[in-house]
Image (cartoon, rainbow, N blue to C red):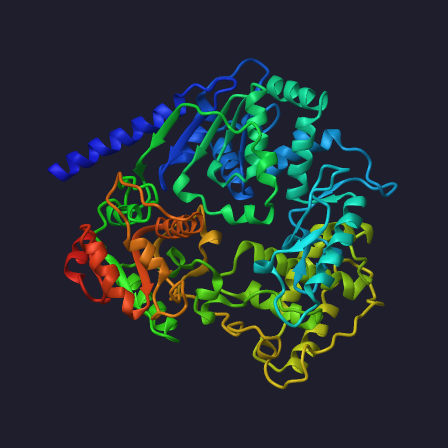
Length: 628
């Protein structure tokens, strides 16, 4: 054993002791405990072990909530692997925060919808309902004033311009009038999304009698509530949790303030903060996990330079802790993003990192190389053929965001229903049920159609002909004769391949992926052996100076650990996004930078003892010792 090995053993022992303390910490009514966990700290292991080993009072359960279905599924899988399937069903709850709020705070207290004979339907987003879309805009692209009569945000609509449809569509006033009337109509029919769900929950908790009943039921059933990724809670989420804590529900809030990257959502609800934070979460004990089982020490050291609070680097203790791969800086000139991808792929190849363990990230997908993305946003307008081409591009692309994939499947399934049954303007699940079509059979039909659709490189007319054939040969149920075959017009009179006619830059790229390609927000919660992060070039804030990368300006102004920098909320969130990006990497981290910024970044990192290379072959000698 060497001194290095002995030191690593000590660090790992300390890391395991941190986890044991977190597993064993007591929670008490009215005093939430905060577990602050760095990236790669093993928080899922801590949550599962706590659920497996920490006893509760007889006949009480534990609620474990997260923001994604994937996280909940992983917790359920680990409980079942430990031969404890009893821990994923009543009286326990393991699932998303949305589902927890729906089942326990809202659904039991709902009146009948305004439309006779209907039941309430909770949608993941307004995109799911055809009536909630107007071209490329949906009700999700608006904020709504608080309605004094209902106490819900179903009043006048305001288009959020940063999310809007852009030029060439209806005017803002027309869109806002449409949104105001459409939301009232859909709410009257019993449809709600997560925003209205939280409104209803807060209203119930604030209503005399109802609030007390909810509190009594929850505190009787659950001995503890664990909230994963609590830093992603919105103001309404925090308001709900504060009221439950005040009611006596013990809580463990697992969070990393440096990974809070969803503050932009609050801009859509400027009047929610005051209402939601009355009775903010009380202070409580804090337990910390500061050991990183995911990344190399090089990655941990670089990540610390992005922390807005100036916290010291975490200790790398996992399998990749000794990886000596320096940070790779790649110069990216205009129109040369593919060269950066090639350099990154070559470096990863030299280290034996396969494409499935690589990720290419950017703050938003517009910054990514178009040839790797597969498809951009959903096309504007209502041309069905263009939307089908877009859905095909998304689902055949080497990498696409989960939300975009979900939208693409919806486009395909709606087209199948329209082709064979005429459609009925309802969400896919309801439309299929109303037409007597099994939901699984509908998805299988859409998958067969996708496999049979022509390549996106053929002309629009050829693609239309092939698409009609694909739909005709793959009905969603037996015995259908397609009496409602639609008339699909080409999206444009222009000649050329369908991906060009439908304005889908990069959609022709459907094979040969060198890495997963996505935005940072889409990659949150995941990891890869090698990560390339694109840092875009921005004009100076005044707009009259030389081209400068504002992100690098913020990044390189970092003070020493323990001396927090002063940043605007927007700038702080930007740096947190890049913090999340770099901490996805296990062994190799690469940064793609504009030419004038590469030297400045190199100087900044080297001054902090972080090894850097800017040539793919540079440093091969020492790398060979670590990656034989």
